[in-house]
Length: 428
Image (cartoon, rainbow, N blue to C red; front, top):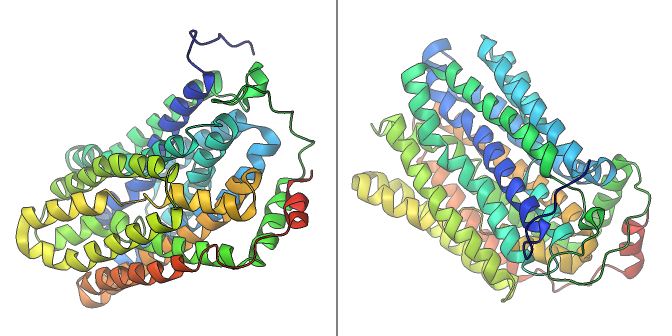
């Protein structure tokens, strides 16, 4: 398909990044929707928080586990076809949820279908685009794309909560499905796989990259990367810290914050507004994290990020007692650090396994993030059902973050992967 060249001075990489930003923004909004569904589904069907949380946990788990295979699929079939296919799956899966009446319907649709589709347009998409299209400003671009993923998850919440309260949760689901469908033609027209397809070098470079070799089977590519990672101490440390990252962000706060506020007498729309404030702060914090990652030691950044997040979560149960002022303070402080951990984690993965393998290895590390998130989503729901409060979940997550600080200290201090191991992964 012929492509109109952008105006002089504008590298096409920025157009690809802009489209990717929108895709990640909407995809994150879709992933945020179950957090709004907890209260209305309890009200409409009498389902418990624990029952609903099982479907949400499956969604989050698949969102992470699809990531490494998504990178391999993008390598095999291209960015454009992969993203368009994922958007169609999401639109169809979300639209069908308006027909669900039983818990297993939610498990299949929100858990399996939406979880699989969202995994294709997860953080690994941002890492892939940044690596393929940018030789310079890669950290900044990855920070922006990462911020869109988290910000979209939070900034859409007040809008969707308003629709759910005023028009019902089924109308809200149709709006979400329509947003995914609207992006299909945009992605189909503007996304391109690599700058070489347009006769361009990567942004910030002058030489054209050689065309990629014949792609191997996506399953083999992904499993080979995992086999390499499992032999590396850095992989286990990065995965362990990212497990904690997932447990302390979208698994706990992203899923249960609205319900926790509702328990304290705060209306759903107001609670969603707090999450939106976190999203705006995250846009600043994660973009700044990308800028800092281009300039400073990633391990030092992660120590600060996890430490400050742990303190904020330990403060959260007390913030409820301070009414809107305490919660607003938490939203700003915690939001700046929502997923600022992504740019330095991708950088450390590239240092450990080679830049050419950074996106794929980060896919497996991100899978650990979502396993942590799924664990926290289920455990926090079960804890609320058993005790009626979320305090134990917030305290536990805060302590886990402080434990992540200790793990970060040891990253990069063991033996590096051998050149043979890297070549084996990169060889088609």
